[in-house]
Amino acid sequence: MGLDAQTANSIRATLQFVNRARIPIPRYYILTPIPGSELYRQYRDAGRLETEEWRRFDGSTAVFKPATMTSEEMTELYWWLNRETFRYRGILRRTLLRGTFWRDPAMHLFALGVNLHYRRYVYRRVPPNIF
Image (cartoon, rainbow, N blue to C red; front, side):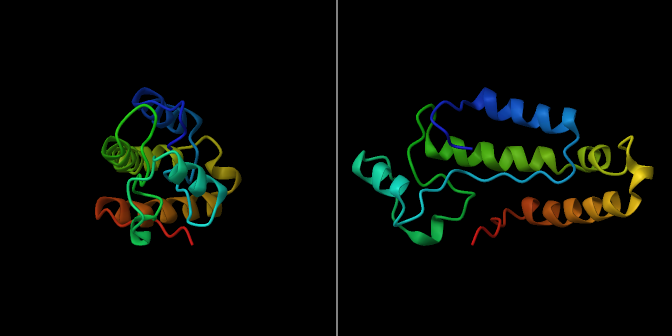
């Protein structure tokens, strides 16, 4: 999330795609211009950085000004996308209720466990570990 062409509608469409494709273990991150990177320098020079507090560079907070929305809207859409993705119904559809379950039940059960683990963190708004 966070590319300049991305809109709130395209982020919502991501949820539809993940559910339709039944991606077993989806993960999302907000584009994060890591200090010292070329992207960081570009955003800093363009005045698009919202903060330089490194603790906020966690992949779940928009630390820059997106082109089509505010950084707060991007951050809230990130958490919305995760909450919607990791609802029990979606988790079950992407893992145990896939037509391929019996080809590799162990992998599907593993995916179920990972999704439930992610759900726990999403609903507590704990950022993903990106480093």
